Length: 392
Ligand SMILES: CC(C)(COP(=O)(O)OP(=O)(O)OC[C@H]1O[C@@H](n2cnc3c(N)ncnc32)[C@H](O)[C@@H]1OP(=O)(O)O)[C@@H](O)C(=O)NCCC(=O)NCCS
Image (cartoon, rainbow, N blue to C red; front, side, top):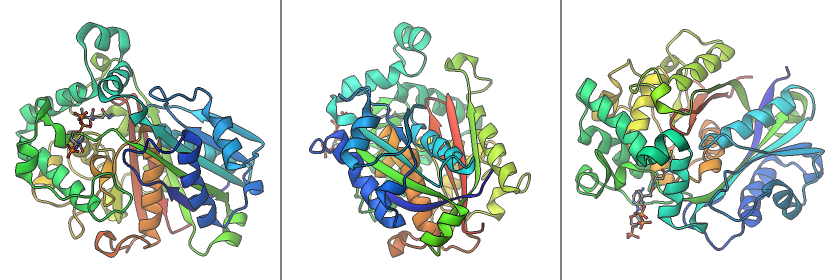
């Protein structure tokens, strides 16, 4: 397999955006990524487009997006892995370059969730759990699923609603400095605790919002990357795992097994297994679709021992200056979570952090040159962990 680098990234401003059509929204991110890479449209040999799209009108989005963008790759496909669709598209584009099928590939993620009303979006997401066994029979929706994780975790380890709230406070703090975030306001623990319950113990401020947005990443082979940029960001580890859909078939509600599997694959590929990832990473972007998910991620990625992730939140160790900065873009919580764009938006942020191109007050100190992204689909149906490095 050939080495593959991220050479350009783009992202639309996340939020409520019913003004742009799906191709228009995609183009905002694609144009920025192509310009960032200095790549011409004709040089893009393959495109992977991530889009769940159940709430919006386009049924075959890839040809429409390519037509609007003026791209004519020799191959393209739509990729879907629930909330991890963006990372799945990255992996497909990575494989196209690593295998030698093309020198330049583009991964795009886009979602127009606000084309449907909130109750419809919540219902459609809920159907994505395990439709027959859990949605139809018990009415489980995503806040409900993650409330189960939170309840089990709090009961087992003694974490509190305040600990969960501190994740939201941190992510809103960094989101307030990110011009592309959906929510740019700081909040306090009391704001979270006094917000309305969605599914106990999760309140509205424990949830990621419903978001429209797009993100795009240009990947290139080693020879092409050397011609395009002095600061390529190398994909050094890319792990993926798929688990059962039905939550009753999971071994454990205190951990997401697919994440542990994907993380081990990525760490092994990067040659850092079984050392602590904390020795290598400058920052991490993790999938905080609900505040409890960020705490589980700390543990499943090996950033904290099992049962102690909430202490990182309690002691504010995932701010800049702590053990490891996490979600300096605001995370899904404050930046927003346009389902299929999220994984690529993490690559957008990780790349710009490593290249030291983000706003000063939310720039992590880059000492080791490594960043991690963690993207979960469903309740753990899919997991993707990617390691990016300034070192080839
Ligand atoms: C939590 C949720 C139900 C709230 O939706 P809602 O009740 O329709 O909220 P509204 O859009 O009516 O917004 C009401 C207010 O709350 C704010 N708000 C909405 N969601 C918010 C969130 N997640 N965090 C903070 N504020 C939020 C809105 O900005 C709005 O504020 P305003 O009145 O000052 O303008 C919805 O955001 C949700 O379902 N989130 C989870 C999405 C999800 O499951 N994603 C997949 C994860 S795997």
